[in-house]
Length: 291
Image (cartoon, rainbow, N blue to C red; front, side, top):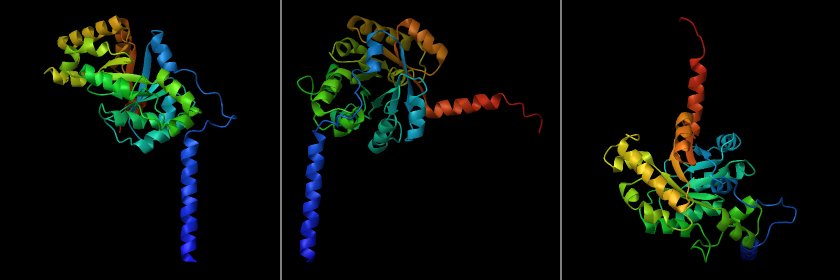
């Protein structure tokens, strides 16, 4: 009798596993809401409009959802410099479904398998750090496109469920809408900017001015003339190849200044930074009197 029970349990487990695998490749029920046709983020960039994103650094769905509905164009979900895991990323992606801000994720390294996992979780863009050569730029694009456009492997069950799509529909949607952001943050990348910008499929050339300044031997001096010269070089390459250029700042005055220079993609303040800034602003206006 115990043996029969074990056989029954094993049979049931195998049946459930097979059903789950089969479901991955089935379209969603017809009652699903119509899926999005295009990324509002990519559309804005193609139209030349500036876009501003909030940086999500803590694995908290309420914080991410609040930012997603606050008016930002995108969420920069931070997996390179924060404690967000794949599990917490998935929770954030589900919590922000239907919100205005488009979720894109910075992975810890320019590696195909890292991009695959955040895309399969439902991210609609990948930010690749330290993209200093044409080869790395080509790798980034290939990681985000299904064949024949790239090398992304098929297994997007979770992404399909977030966007309410079947497999074939999601492949087309992803190939057209996933945003590829490469970070220019090494002196070598500035030297190679023309070859990097010429790679088809690059969506944004984002200048990481802090790491760039250290790479140039002027660590932390992000407004140094050498950095400004590098920014000009990236802007010029972006214009030649029709690629928006990005910059990190949460200062409204600087954002306006950089927009006038030609920047169109901005990584703004983090969840923690916005919370701390709001708290300091409130407290500074309270007249507590002498103690």
